[in-house]
Image (tube, rainbow, N blue to C red; front, side, top):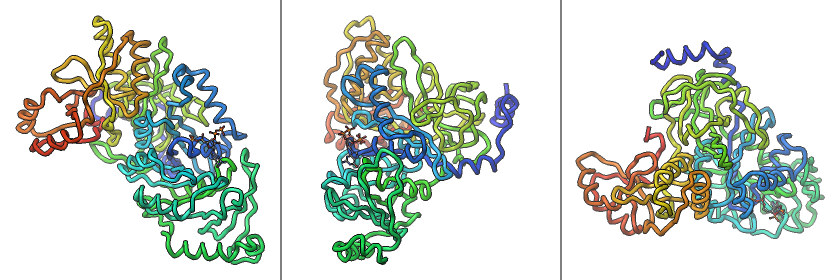
Length: 550
Ligand code: G4P
């Protein structure tokens, strides 16, 4: 059995098809654009997604995504729960070609109770498209999502939606985004009117007026354009509004930030687009900008070294594990972001955590939500690996080298419940179920050092229902949930000299999480602040990187 990374890689290579050259890989990587679409529920994320898929020829007529959404409710079992509550808990991945690029679009669960999933999805993308409802402005969930994007300085493109309705003043909206989200705005298009008198947008970069016609939003439509705001045609079209609109644009150019690619790539400045997703208007300009200016896959950090996307050997990490909710089949789909090299069907790759080499024949890619067997994939692509529970979030797969990708964190949960199994003879099943659910990322689990009853941490209360449902149906552990007296959690670390007295003093508030890392369960935020102040030499972290467990 070869042991060095190169020897392992060579032995694997003999059994797979001809490896791609660096040039093949470089060309393929340069075409990739991988981004997430994020918003507060109801801002229009699904509608925008649908229009993006129309442009990518991934669907033929709008309505398909929503229809599929409801079909999924009916067919999948979460089926029961998803259906009952009318929510989608899944993150879906869609790949399509557009303008010579391969776009990987990652949708995220709309419901805030599943935001941990969303947070982790954001670790797998290179940019994000933020959809804002022009009548509502910046909403709470948008604020949280942006905080997460900021952890990795993810470039953000903003689409301000629903201009066909009575909306807020666009200048106000821009000010609010800048103030609340702390990101500079660079308007690329600017609305002409709104609601009933919404007439179109002016593209500042192209100096082009794009005229809105209602009623054609279910397909790709070429809206009429007028080149040049200073043209006679523009003056004739805008008629009485011409002078005031020119003044507005002049003011805007003077007062707003211009688009600057560097600032965008650093996550400091967001290009802003206006339109109506329902009318499929303004979305194309946004997509064009995204594929042109958002970054192709870049290098990714591992504990060992940075991994460049064009390296010849394959590597990638798992950012999400989705269970098949049918209790008779424990199979799961692990979503892996490719970080380097080329995946090809039938290749052998190493599951680094388990030190095991596996032959992958059944990985899938996701075309507009449908799964098809993946023939090949490059950095930026997402492939799904079916498995029976052996793959965890943050696991690395590679063509031999024992790498551990960084940046797939566990976020500090915000809600906590103590779990008690009704039948004490099922305690083992409870523990097994909790560990597996935690590995999947369905919720987080903490085993207190001094108590038998585990504590579950979640970001939203629906996660508890999900855990209770699955513990009962899949593990035969019918549970009671009680108040845990925990307000927040911090992962703690320090030198042995500092840790020893800390562990002794706070043993009753310490717990091991599902990955065996030590955490402090604070009863209140004030208590946390006090303990942080008093515990010299101890680090308190609000996220825990999965990779550190390895
Ligand atoms: P989400 O995924 O962010 O939750 O939002 P979604 O796209 O489902 O849109 C939420 C609601 O807003 C939907 O209406 C949708 O039709 C509407 N909407 C989206 N974009 C626009 C727009 O540009 N203009 C207008 N006027 N409405 C828009 P719904 O009544 O909740 O659902 P449906 O019955 O239309 O499907």
